[in-house]
Length: 279
Image (tube, rainbow, N blue to C red; front, side):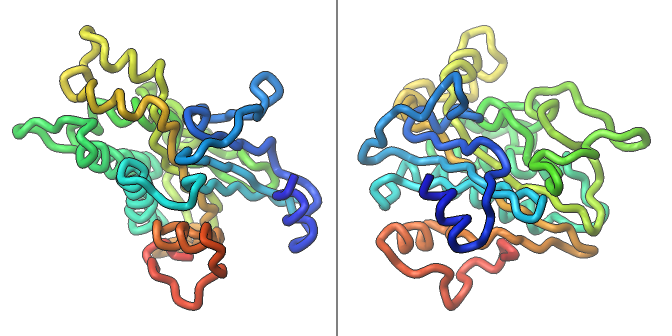
């Protein structure tokens, strides 16, 4: 309700564009948590990661923004590694974006950055004779990011045009099948970029079973430490340009920025410490 009040009072946006997704702790791993069948009825605990996915509608146009942050305002080492992996996924995608870029390539590049973070955390084991790109190709990334990288946005939050005749068809592989579009990006398109990393019990249980091809790449002992972690998602709305993109989401994104705002610091800052985000 505070979000709706703020959006209306300061920006004149009377309506939300969709049911807000507000999960904390383990509930942050539920991709669309907070609908009528699963109400937001859990108290936030000290140390929880909070994932707030909220957007308003303004003059008929939608917005879609997700922020993830520690409830107490300070990232733990576990939270820091996962968060930085998701943020790096955004940075890599923004570096790739532009007229003629494949959205499928963007999705897989984002998965690669998240897998690198999981390797750093000791969750994913990378054999000496294999590369991160090979793990992406075998679809290990979909265990931790089962949704697509983003979607068109405009009159509707999930706007139309994702799959059209004469354009790339949906790929029937884990993670990739959840992409809301497989098109080649063109200047003028408006799309969300929302990589995420989640610890979803059912997916982890399946991936760590002895019969799973992913079992040998996952450290079960370390994974146990992340059972109640939930997840991290960062979501911006961007416009594709001829040689890049414009990021319309002016939110705290770096760990320094998030902790600064959580301490009551002013936003936006006078200097952008991460111009790679194209804000």
